[in-house]
Image (cartoon, rainbow, N blue to C red; front, side, top):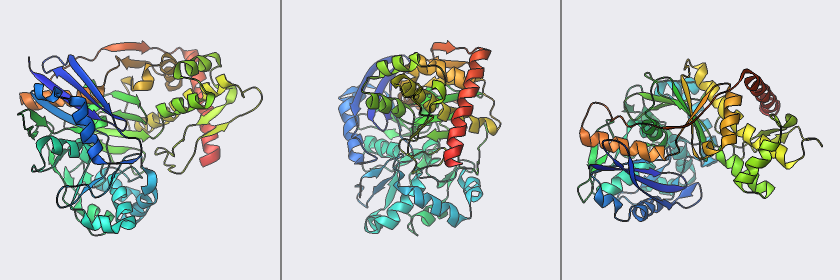
Length: 465
């Protein structure tokens, strides 16, 4: 049996799955935690990968790494990090992103250049913050990598040439999915004239090299492209992912260039494209609400189920850590519609569920407005395991929702990419995706969902216009 491994190096942990290359059947699993924070030592990811693998990777024929996108890993001339890596959810670069948009001549110029308009999460904005606030460290920087680039490089050995893939490169703000080339002029603009080395961009099925024990290393990719590959997305499939953050994305055959900045014009890991809308707040809304009410997540779900749909008009705007879409990096969460009838634990719990899902529904609307017509809506991520989340999602979206069986789809996509690179075929192997549930929605429930969304939209617009 040919065995392949996929790594998901996420914000919170390193997860590894080992699969049968022919069928995708998961044979082994492992995990190790990452440190908390929005700036962490890149070496911690390597330590977690080694701890999770514990000899596991010595028994595979190929491996690929998918990781959190849009981080910034600056290395010196010797390949050592000059500072802790800034993660995608570090918003200190919000003002830098605004400056860059203005300096290039506006959002449309950025969208035309790289398919996306920079916000705080983009690597290009982090580079501007770095140049302005830590110039002595920026001067020492000779190379810029992304989190998955760093781990792929460490797997190959420090003497290897760093590489990346188009899916992850498309989140930097200085690589164009439309042309497949770096925009080093934008890199220099962001980094105040500095032009550090960038990793070579590999083709989707191109091998990066081999581990010291001989396993083939595939190109790897970003986490969203990895999940899309793990799910085997076809045109018309739209994914709503409810992890710590939330994402809405779809596979597309052409690149996008949204000047509003809401849609990131990413590439995927197969040679196509992956227009994506990201929110900073998804499952964290539920865990935070549970903490506020002094209950665990099952009890939070019980409380929410006892309250009526719409929570009698109580609305939670779930911008707990600022927000990326809508672009409100300095916002905070808020409750609207408090009165004696709604000041109950169940109403607040219900408002947390509905606020999280209304925010994701807004993200989906952005994709639909570009002409994407959902054939299927797939709900994934940790929060998608909740029956109440599934039911409210179908109600608010007004569309049946398919929930694939719970799986580490980012890691599974990386493993599928490893199998593809090992086989050298024109297309990735066909691995089946099993469905855990399909939730339909009645006309009455869809009507209630529209009322919930209207109430949410009114509260959002009243505060933020």
